[in-house]
Length: 96
Picture (tube, rainbow, N blue to C red):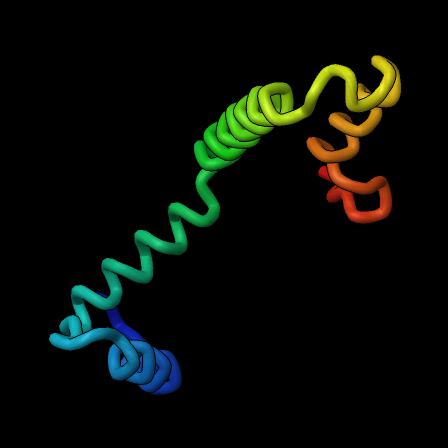
């Protein structure tokens, strides 16, 4: 049993009303919201996210290597172009 104040209950009922049909019960809605909140704050999400970024960068680099002709630009210029494509423009990079 959980006590929920009227404003919170109204917010919960509002959330339930916009969910796909069949609408969840209040108990199920609370479980779903709790699961969402805990997964959003979980420390386990960061390593998976970083691993996914590394894998995506590796795949992008492999694709670029296949797509770019070696004689399209001199070696250093080719590397500079690949780096810019993989990392994005310096003004648009996110800082972490």
